[in-house]
Length: 597
Image (cartoon, rainbow, N blue to C red; front, side, top):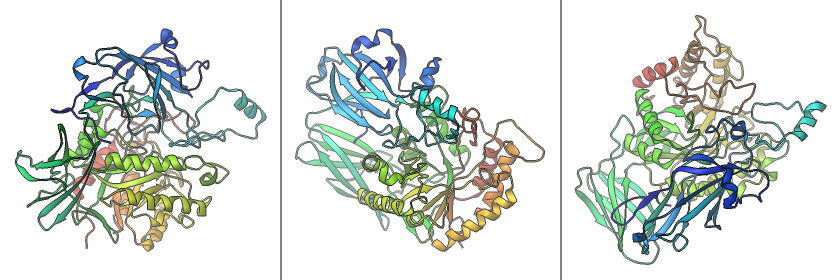
């Protein structure tokens, strides 16, 4: 699915702004509200999560359907064009009505979907758009909700009679099996775009390097058969290659991660009267032994787990914040991040292409587990998971910044090891078939019994989340480092590259102690220094991603005070002492060739 583009052949109309909005009142059939329902509506910003935009507590705690409505009119001059209504993300289930007609349904809150609205939207006549949104999470959704009555980091004291009675009495609630707030709504832009009646449907590119030359192969899908022509220009606007499918660029400039030069060429694809342009970065990615190679050189991941999270917007798209985050990533001398724990807005990937930031691209398959039964047999998420991986790769495959696919985060793979192995191994093989660039495939495992975990060791890159010294052996860094080294001895024998994709400590900004203890800025800095000292000794460790880039919102509970405080930055992007520590450390560690013997 191509990102909307305005050019000589295509137009875009932004449908964001103030929409009418109401939470479900329990009197409507699921996913439908007639226009009269909005007579008592609030105003709601689009794009944004709705949860923090009204002081009524129901907005924050809502579980179920919510409804958006707006009217619009497009110019009569577009009568000869194909019209497409596109939603970049609606969390988690959407039903779309145009003038009362159901025109689309979509499951999955972090990837785009669109409707060919030609003939449904009449230029020059007002159209009414209603979007129903469900934020329900359960064993059929990704991320996954808990159906057995316990939220993440919570305990319902299931054997207490009064608690059992209260659970049956209370209104429906979402019980996330993940540690971030379940922000919902129309969280990314809504646009109407046009194309000619005969148009370019999709473009897939692969890049290779042969000597000093770059080879760029194009697979272009069109609405009808016909001739496609392609030109590639360099930064100066000079045409360096032209053809119809496989183009060779002599003495090509390669795309290099920060602080190198992320060189981008401009490709223009023409089909009849339609035109589409996209950036092309020529680079190679491969795993060789315990090394991760970009353009044939061993790369070291310096970066973070991240979240799309900010005050007021929630998980809503915020380009200003994205630009600020890229600036802070550069400031800390980082070169990468993981899209924990869902695909991010496409605009962020474009920024990373331009700025040389490497991305591990992750699906929202977080929280698979936490049940007394075999979730791989009783869950209802399997086909949905495959569909998400397919759509993720189709959306993001052309970004040079994306160097690895992560199928999910912290699933339970040890309670039912045979089922877990069968599921993830088949998913790994499926993912491999989807990407012509053959990027490495992984998933990220939690703190588990790594000796019983049969599947993590089979990933192209082993990605582990470990909290020695925080959630276990809390505050005792001598014991934490001892335990970490015992585990690293195990992974060294696996002979795979390993990234520590999460490790960290909750830290209250401004809380200082002369003797480092938990929650102080001194402890967070000491914690990272002790863990990193152990990572530096191991040549097979190819990256460090502290958790988290910035503080973020979570469900309320006894384990969280105003959200998760593990950020190197505060939620409003002010650096804690640990951010300065990593700025110095990563400034001294090269992106390429670190740990080479």
